[in-house]
Length: 416
Image 1 (cartoon, helix red, strand yellow):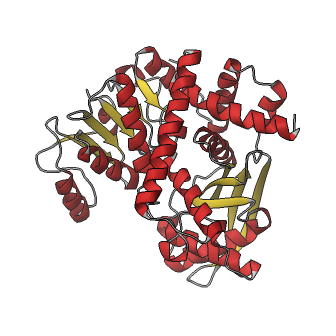
Image 2 (spheres, rainbow, N blue to C red):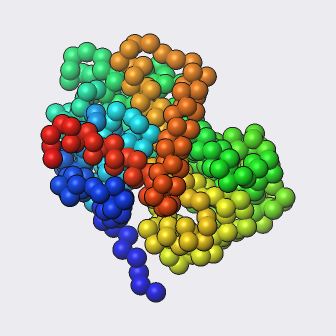
């Protein structure tokens, strides 16, 4: 079997070409969309706790701003690459496009290992990175957010660093902040809640009763654990969970409160009493109704896609299914809710946070989730309609919706 090409930037470009065929996309617009508008690479010195100075490298990719400011997270990871950040900025453009947000895509990264850094070092890195990219960001230009190994505290430092440069509070420069400095209620649960909203809609279309539906979740972190509890409340039976150390399986259902207790005492869900140990790979092939990959990219590939038995795959993670695997799942009648739709609840509530910052008026959690539900339901309906019209999978349908919208903006602005 030939090895799939898994360069994320090339995958993103392929997805544009694939969707473009169905809407007779102008070749000039296709070329515009296949490259970021701007990629900034910066280096900045940081004094470490031991008194030495280390030079770090940071990246910010700004893909397209035809519809609005750039929007997207900043990740701290030793393996951050320019191609990865470029691809992620492109996917953010389409994620914002599919849920109808007035944003284009951006993404950033700092090459570092946050597990080896103290809080003080993380703060100095965060401030130095924002100072280095400050000329190209701002509430009306580019609005960063948390991503891998960054969080609300990191966003607070970044917001403060930018505010000091501007000489006034600029809460709207980043999202995912603590509530006390302009964060939005509901932001922490937003990605999981958005994912559950589109699972509800997919179940309606498929005639799948969520009461008693068996669910497996790969990646029991923030999003995976919250999705588990939300689905449990709807009557779903969570039968398998996993984290980086491995997984657990009980076809009769897993008690989530016991998982929480076990994970807080052992650091993992592995070896939960009353469950069978399984690998992350085995979890993907279980006989379940709903599979939620909420961990890393490239988990469902050409090698294992034919063994996936779920009726619905909801991609809470970014890029968990490779292009070849997507084709296999579609051929086998499995409904895949693509990442740019399934995990767009996070960026949607980030948009709500930004709007609240600009208005200096803040909403209750109930208002946030009601607006999120409306947005996710509408987005699913649009994607489903496009997939039916063109007889394609939901992923291609999502790209058709997003690219059509962006292409229209590019055209009316006279770029092409």
